[in-house]
Image (cartoon, rainbow, N blue to C red; front, side):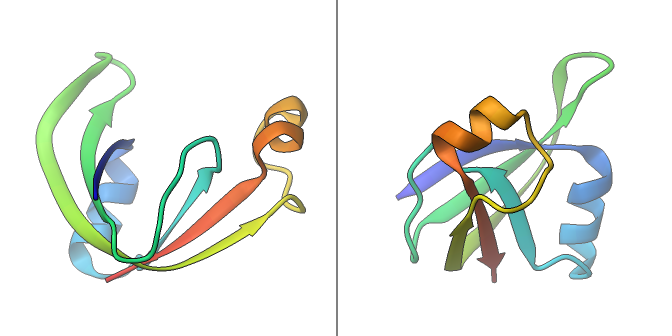
Length: 86
């Protein structure tokens, strides 16, 4: 399955360079090994897509509720997912 998600400019640059090979997301959506993430660059200032994007294959998923990066209510409801990309 192909899943489209927003990605902020700095993170897209690291994915494009190969420096970043994982993605941390709120686990409020389903994702499986073998899926493809279409990560489209989103500019939060202009509230629009920039046109830059990258596709990455999901190779591993780790779900957890231990990190403190999102609102507590969302973490309680969904947990986290750390997504290894190839």
